[in-house]
Length: 141
Image 1 (cartoon, one colour):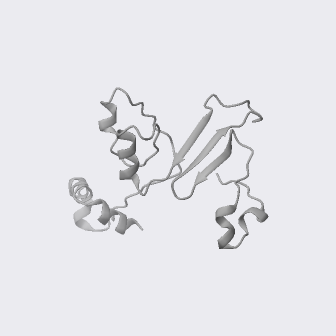
Image 2 (cartoon, helix red, strand yellow):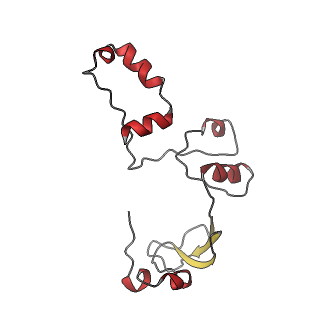
């Protein structure tokens, strides 16, 4: 889902880009921004579905998934979204609640069964399981 943004908002010179005040009509309104660190949002009492129960949201920018998960573990952030499949440790943490959500991401690994050795299901499974993530990503792209 992509927002509809008026041209006068996004079509500005680079030097003015950080001065743009975000526009929108969602459940939250822009309050402030600490450039490259965070964005603060407040509940929009005029939202057509009614004001949200949560009154304030601060979005903190992190450099990567590792930093995001670390901030979550330290209690710096209260909610994380990540595609890192390392959530089993959070299932044991009784203070965390995990929700799996469907996404538009599709992962596929193809096996060429024209290769005689891979026609044996056990061999193709072994070939699949022995690949590193980097190798698999390189092959599928």
